[in-house]
Image (spheres, rainbow, N blue to C red):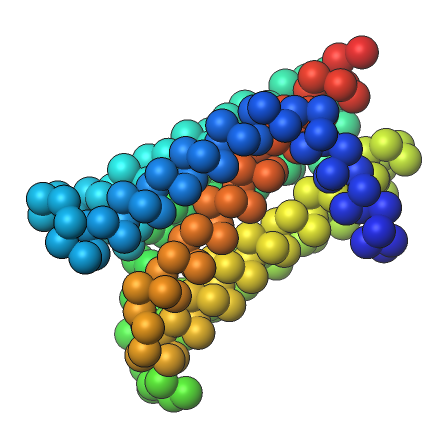
Length: 220
């Protein structure tokens, strides 16, 4: 995989839709500022302003982006007739369900109890259970991606590589930084801003890129 070409394609999508991305990123920053004001008691104690609260304001904004990406990939799948676009759609639909219904948290708790996982490295048994769930689901999707990747054209392979790199960035913030946040019990608010802010910004990039695919590549 040529990362230089991948980032060049992503940058091209940003330039083509820079107004859309600016709107998304400004909204992302608005939620970061709202969280900071809430943490420092500079606004009334509305917990829905927090980035860490499930079903909070910023969470719903993230759900909307995941839903839009899901719909856009469905539209691409209908136009291009390749299975891999449907797999991408299902992947982001899973992310939507996982974020809104706490799949990996709930099943992680079950696995923690079932395997009697013990804490280590400052991580809770629950954290190891969640990792098992995330990696198991990720493995299933990886098999689907490999199978469908072999049956697409060169354009589809390029698109898949680009989205895959963006998803790796999402995993970096959503899993690695999240675990680091738990393992290092200091500067909690800074970790929250980096973790959740990073996830929001990367999801905005993905939405902008997939929107670009519909507008400039697929429907032309």
